[in-house]
Length: 204
Image (tube, rainbow, N blue to C red; front, top):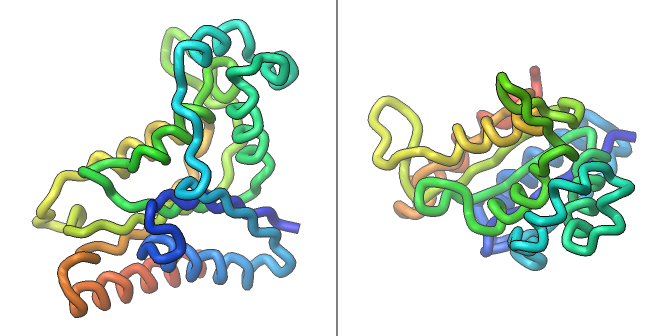
């Protein structure tokens, strides 16, 4: 059976626009993969621990799963990495906060992007250690950040593309629901656009 991991990042929880559009996507993925097992990690309810001095100190000497399980500061990181690596499809639903990722998503990234465990450093750059798989990132924003005349900068999509490639994920697809805070008409248009993007991805 196909396993799908949904990382939900909005502080609004299941009332978030990104959650609602991700639910449409996940329903489509489930239709394509009968019997798919859906797991959801809600960062709004259980935000990851911030990487601290103990995490930094133990990261370098503990680069294997077996070693990390005995390192107190890395046990949460190891659980999150194992959960991530077990999924055959990853879905991230997130708002754009101040042009980039929200704090809870950044904290999750800092737990799973770990030297020696999910990437190696080489003289020519970092090499991901996790197998590639489809990644769908559903983004909701208050303004426009795509198109010919965006009204705000976008540091979210290039960052996520780069950081996920660092651990080996390169099959990445974005769905954007923009102008969600600009009134009912803009909201309806943004959701309709997101649904069209989802439909196009599902027929790939």
